[in-house]
Length: 330
Ligand SMILES: Cc1cc2nc3c(=O)[nH]c(=O)nc-3n(C[C@H](O)[C@H](O)[C@H](O)COP(=O)(O)O)c2cc1C
Image (tube, rainbow, N blue to C red; front, side):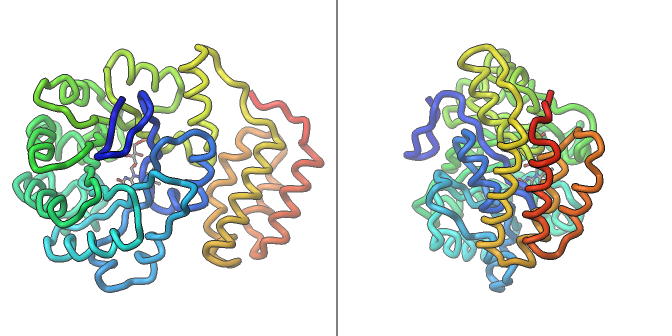
C-alpha cells in the first residue's frame, strides 16, 4: 500500500486534485466525507504568499477533519519558493505539493507551472532545495511534458525521486494539449513500471467513471487516481468508485435530499469560512452539477445563482425539495 513520507494510504487511494476556485476547504471537506483519501488545496502563488497577499494567505486554511491534506504552491524563483515553504509549513499541512503542471499563460510565462517543463534542471534543483528546507513530505504534480515532441516524464520522475520527492501525480497530457484530446495514461504506467521508481505514481486525467478508475488500477497498475473535474459539484464520485471496487456494482446516484443537504452544508461552510458575501458568490459554480439534468429547473437554478443573500439561496434549496423531492436521478 502506498505511502507519502510517513503517511500510510489505503490500497489505490483516491486523491482530490488541486483545482483553483474549486478545491477550497468546504469542498474538500465534502469530498473527504465521501471517501477522498488525500485532498489538495487550490494552487497558491509563492510570490503572493511572500507578499502576504490576502487571497493567497486565505488559501492556506485547512480543517482538521480533512487530513491528510496537501497545500500546493507554484513559482519558479528559489528564494520565493523557500520562503513559501516556511509559510506553508506554519499552517500545518501534511504534505507540500509543487505545481509543475499548470498550463495557463500567466503562470507559464513566468516559467512556473508547466513552464518549468522547459527547464528540467531548474525543476529538479527547486524541488531538491524545497525538500531540504522542510520536514514535511514534498510531492510534485506535473504533466507528461511541454509538447508531444518533448515528453521527458521518465527522466523527470527519476530525477525528482532522486532529490527526495515523495510522490508524483502525473496528468496524462502535455502543456500544449491544455485540456484537449484524451489523457494518455501509457507514459504514466511506464514511469510506474520503471524498476528504478519506488515512490508512489498517481495517475490523473479523465477519470470520470468508476470503470476508468478501475482501468487505471488494473490495466495501468498505477498507485492511485487523482480526480478533478468529475468531483466538481459531485463529491459522491469518490464513494461511487470505492463501492464499485468493492462490489463491482454501481451505487444509485444520490437522492434529491442528499444533494440538497450537501448544497446547504457547502454553502454554510463557505459562509462560515469566508463570510456571507463571498460564501454566497463562490459556491454558485457548484450548483449546476449538484442539480444536473432536472427538467424545468431553470427558475430554481436562477434563484440559487443570482441571489445575493444566503437566506434566499437556502429558501431555493427548500423549494427544490418541495417541488422535486422525489425526482429520480439516473
Ligand atoms: C477548474 C480547474 C482548476 C484547476 N486548478 C488547478 C490547480 O490549482 N493546480 C493544479 O495542479 N491543477 C489544477 N487543475 C488541473 C487538475 O488538477 C487536473 O490535473 C485536471 O483537471 C485533469 O484531471 P481531471 O480530468 O480529473 O479533471 C485545475 C483544473 C480545473 C478544471
